Length: 28
Image (cartoon, rainbow, N blue to C red; front, side):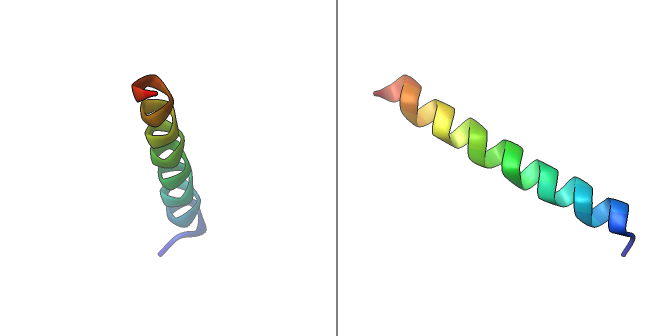
């Protein structure tokens, strides 16, 4: 596994978390 792959994966995880938070805010 390349470091770049791990970095990309972590970025996608963060993006998903942000999107989920935004969705919750929109629902509220």
